[in-house]
Length: 216
Image (tube, rainbow, N blue to C red; front, side):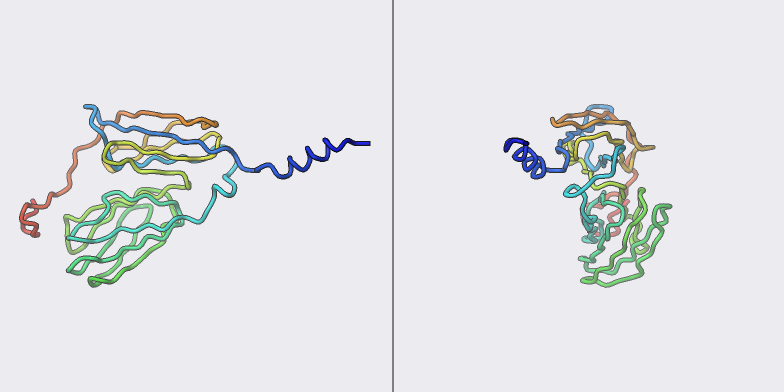
């Protein structure tokens, strides 16, 4: 006859959580002169079994605002399958488009106060422009994973994911090619630092008077 302790152990086993332990990866990205690099996208693509709930959820929607004849933000990151909204909070019309391989699209002229949206279902980098205002440039990075983050002004980002093996991808609009490596997450948080060589920033700068004629 089996003891009560055996049955108690079975009950406890059934009640145990079925999900993996989550850990955090802290990333610091610097330029070749040691300066912090903002707007770098860090993503972790699982190499083992696909993630399971509660780590998996529908892609979080994104938003890229048009305001003061600029896009905000310069770099936006979403998971593949996410819908991105493009609200016009400006005082003029905009015509948003992209010729990128990951997503070619066009949102014809729409007025201040209006918003249009589109679903980005293929991973890759999407360069955004405005057919009316040539200086308006932004980037949308679409990743095939729910585990991602973007570095802030100090060049740091933190990504949390279940324990396991991952392909770490580091991307930036001024990086010639993504930096790829393999990483393993366990029960403890880890940190990584990257030094990257960026191409020159060719963005047109707004003049101090804030008018279109002030661009150069």
